[in-house]
Amino acid sequence: MLLRQMKYFAAVVDCASFTEAAEKCYISQSAISQQIQSLERELGVELLHRKKRRFEMTEAGEYFYSRCKIILSQVDEAVRETKRLGTDSELQLRIGYLSGYSGLELHKVIAEFSGLYPEVAIHIVNGTHEELYNLLRVGDVDVILNDQRRAFSDFYVNFELMRCGCYAELSSRSPLSGRDYVSLEDLKGVPCILVASRGQRNVEQDYYQNILGFGGSYLFADNLEEGRLMVASNRGFLPVENVGSLPEPASSIRRLPVYQEGHQIMRNYCAFWRKDRTNYYIEEFAQMLRRCLAKPD
Image 1 (cartoon, rainbow, N blue to C red):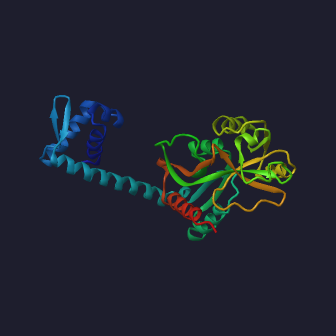
Image 2 (image 1 turned 30 degrees about the vertical axis):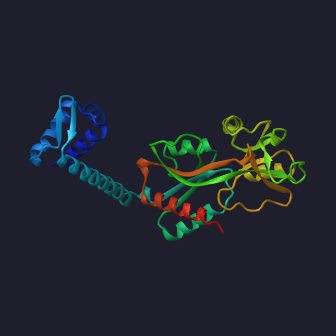
């Protein structure tokens, strides 16, 4: 019995079609049919009961299918771990995080992870949502801490970390600073300060303006510190999310929750990585980050 035959059989059942399974496995329909028949002859039992162009699994077929899925999954895991152990490039973890992130948890987890796995070299980059997504897509980073802006893709592991509220950091001299919260309507007359590189400014503005609903004009900062200095000088407001425990703002800055239709705007934050590049270190880092975010100091 060949492992390939087990893959073909599982594909036929998963697709509920010999034709679609053949396309998925990059072989002809006649070839995949012959392989299934060869498998049945070797086992001495009927796995699929054919009815013209349809088929049903026999009781033996249902059992064999369930065992195939387990075995194939174990084989895939064994292959990944073997590659991890035998490839020097796997002994590194390249982490991407948002330029606007200022929580403490990422620093704590990186320190904890390095203590547990000193053999892993950690490399860190930051960027806007789209910059991080593109780095992950082409394989230049292994895992990213990012906000969710599009539907989850089956191409990635979409590891949800937390839901967090949206805030606006304003100068204490702003007329809005004395409020308990601000609405999107309140902020329309105040420039919105976004942290973005020059090539990403239009993309970031489009998202905040057309998706989140922040109206008015826009200013840009190259980094978070520059953005907060612009806030301190009362040039506009800086949108931030409480991803974990945010440090208290400077005395010249007020941080107020942003409301829409009577409720604070909430955002979804995740760790993302490519399924075809998953490994133990990525999964362990993501689990550690989730636990840390769930229990901020």
